[in-house]
Image (cartoon, rainbow, N blue to C red; front, side, top):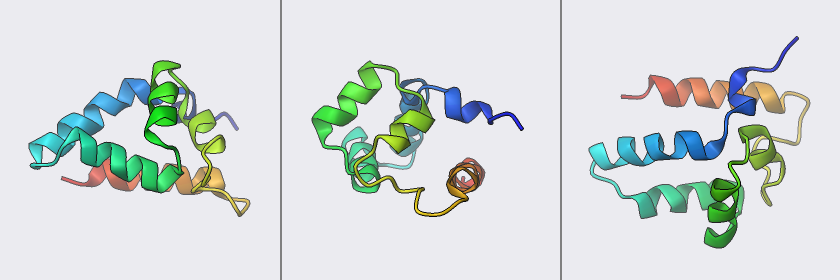
Length: 90
């Protein structure tokens, strides 16, 4: 079974869309970064480094200090499920 394309997509290519969506809802880029840092455990410098390196989603989460979607055999399923839920949100 091949991986879903989100795993090979760079976080940097999607990040501006997160910021745009947040801003449309009255939120800020700073708040987007805060949530990503909370979820992953990256500090701001490491987050920016990952974005500048155009790290793919799989590597981004696997290298994250908190590794939010690991700890069970269904880590990839959890990532996919979370991404689907985020896409459905208004």
